[in-house]
Image 1: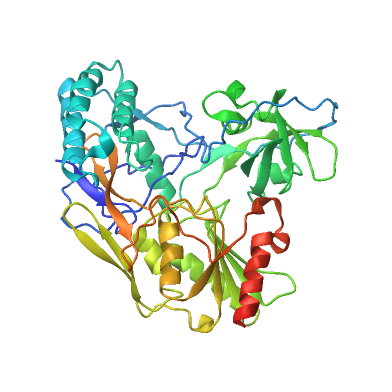
Image 2: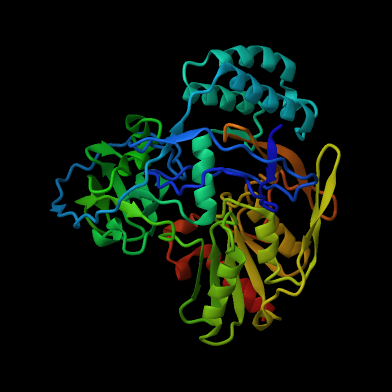
Length: 484
């Protein structure tokens, strides 16, 4: 039997899963929705079938950019900027797949297929003939030429469900995810977060002290080309897109054509380095200039001890004096663990229900813990910012804090992606994330497919602005002034 852990609920020990820390070249994408605390005790998980290989294997970029219409590369010939000196950092070998006997493949396939049959949230499998799927995919899985091909077939099987939430993960992805959750996942690259733009890749955030920052790049700079290929010509970069090409082995260089706001295009050569896991902190806080308002940005609920990081950031703000308002920015928050989300919510709201989660045969109340609020925030008005990249547990946070009448919501509708996933660990170290529960607000309504609707809707490409010029932040400040 597969052992089982619940994502976005209490994370349970996973036996001997990946006891070595594994540094990888690329960060694996996380696109999960919210799970729960377990209704049954998990079974022990056998050790994963992984061995070490000397060559790191590439994975996907954290947020692949959508395909855009190709544009012409800049015609001006810019002057190259010399690259910074490379920092020599050893990279731990990435895990590779061990061979799988047919009996092992049969067992894994049958376990996965049966779990979906018996536990999937939708008894009609969203219109998929699940028995026919077994007849089609089982022979393909058993005949796969390699473990990689086998795991690809398993992923295709789960993708048939088409719910954008359920997924199958290979042992390698599971290992990377564990390191991400513990804050130990590193990658080699230049240290930037990039958003898609019709003209290129807009840099929204830089790793502190990272290669891009050392080379003079700044937030709001636009990447026009990688090498001689326009950034927008995504098909030319292969399956990982331009971000995949920008990343690479430590010590190697990448040439970017970059334009700063109001400036001319220039060529920058950047030496890739190992980017540590804390280069982009999951929580950051600042006082907005000229105000007594704090801006707290929470990028994920998928980090152990996140509520303590939030408390520390708020305490740091309060050392400079009291606050007359707090803006919590969840616009780039892709979700995480429900238990972590509820504990974080408990810093602002002293207990109470935010609704229930229900599956085929069970339901569970979602309760905010009591006695954890930050006293200095008592009576301080709060606004929460949301947008279409606010997903899963982040949506539950926004909905819950409004249900408890503690905050107003500003921005654009959230993603509407709140099905709760349960994780089932398999004997080879792979994992099935399966949508088994749906989140219902206290009035019985669903967020799935609808999202959190803001109290004050502001349609804006907010990432193009500095914090104080951000139209949605300005709207939040206006809401806070009304409250005061």
